[in-house]
Image (cartoon, rainbow, N blue to C red):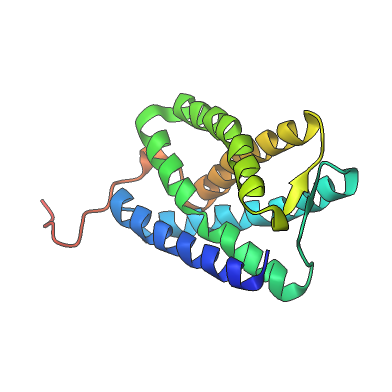
Length: 172
């Protein structure tokens, strides 16, 4: 993965984040919580990537230079749109909805990542066996649970939060 590709992904995730922010009508506090959740998961994800490299579950073509790591961390932080969606899920369905979202992420994550590695083999490869698949599934589950948990710590529980109005709506 090159810095140019990281800039492209970071920009793409920023656009998605802005769109999801608009449609979920997230308040500033919820946005800050989502970004904190994304950043917290980013730090953990970098550790998971290094651990997977160490035990041979995968090899990622990453250079661990400060600029490159910072770009990756920004990319993870911009994935905060996931937590704005989980906030809506928690608001509508409570902890059961979050559990279902966690399972869905853990099931969809490994095939998604395998597709990326098949599409862009220069980014790296996965090791043989079931261990890499389980590690990726666990990483996606951690992504939902950790990021949403940090967002809840920063912004409070979803059911206690009022929905923000769109700018063109008037207060009743």
